[in-house]
Amino acid sequence: MLLRKYTLPSESGIYTVSRFTFMRIEGFNFSILVSLAGAALLMLPLPTFCSLIGFLLLGLGFAPIYPCMLHDTPERFGKEQTQKLMGYQMAVAYTGATLLPPLLGWLAAQTTISILPFFTAFYIVFMLFGSERVNRIMKQRTAQSEMI
Image (cartoon, rainbow, N blue to C red; front, side, top):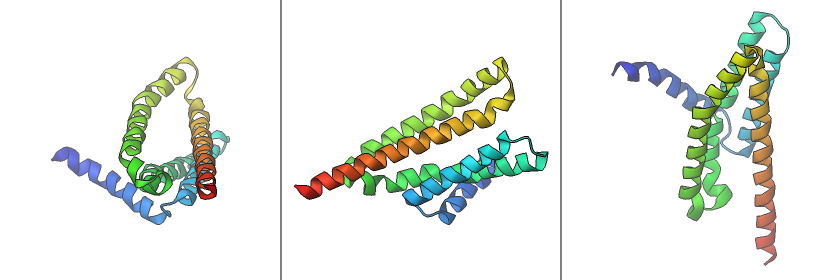
């Protein structure tokens, strides 16, 4: 019960932020851009207050991404594929949440913690390119199915 007391505010924050963004691809791309702005603020040699704003933007940008992806799965890939693809999305999300923090910790131990914004920006850009590639493939498939 004690653990639940501390996790409830963070869970409600994720859902509240998710409601403020539009649950579509546009919301996903907007969230990516907000996260990228946060990473950029962390990269720049600015006062500590700006770093705080950078972390805030990272959190606000990342919060709705997972719900947006799950919400859009039936529309993007069809209802018959939804269950399987949501399972893949969850598996990849949990794998990333398991492997990326230790990887960052190891890299920071080898170098310095100042690689955090670059590490984060790399994965934000990777996620954006991956999403845009899927969008392009889905548009091509839709165009091909309309021609038939």
